[in-house]
Length: 384
Image (cartoon, rainbow, N blue to C red; front, top):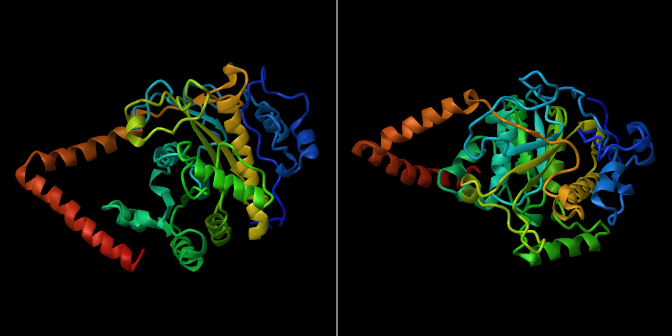
């Protein structure tokens, strides 16, 4: 792997854009020459201009290297229709940017709003045949979840505490062990450390106050990111990873009649189709473009969240109502075929039904939850 430079990374890669609305007159190279780093972005700059300044350029009709080809013959489009729990038919999932066709060892960085964000990582991974590779960096308290706390730990999840209680050595050891065994890696990190919740303005205000105190740009639709877990993960696995995915997620239907942002959908609301569509903007970043030192990586990470903020400003606050509820660029309605999900649904549904329809099965089901939870909690208390 090539040596990475110890300074803020350059511009993100190009993404699909609508030539009628978003294509600039200058070439990508000229734009990058003028804006070699995201630190040149003004916090007051409108979202559309900021995205254009960052070097995005139209590639409509051009097939991106590694992008998933359309199965109907067209370039760069989505696969065939799907039925998947959490995904609605007729294009509930709209993807913008760079999602490689093939599986990779990656770190997945995303903004965090609700529990559905966890499913979003699975939605992308299954499109790369990497669903079983998804692992999470989770806050320490989640290890006490019945059964799931133990499961996440056994599946390569990393539990971390915040601020001064963060155990860097423990996280490095767990990641090194997975690299040593060549475990496929799709590590999901939410750098904000907690959810962005418009109904808890104090958290947002504290985050903005911290950014201002540290001389960082104040963010509106995301929280100020924390760098520790991201730095440890990249530094520990830098020779093992293929890329970092910078993912920005927005949910339709989360703006009230006054134009104010509302709470993102809960898992139940999402599964009950109360969210019309989810928009996912993906930027694949090469490791060589990420600074190694923590102090520089901190600035780089904040700049990535500045980009997220500008994308979300365009999504939620664009003055032209026609530009709202979508990201700049051309999004594709990404769909899955039945063969991706039906076998698992039939297996799990059949297994659950066979247990619940018999007396002995119901007893086994209850005992599994009770004893599994107790044993799991004991396990994670000894070996998280």
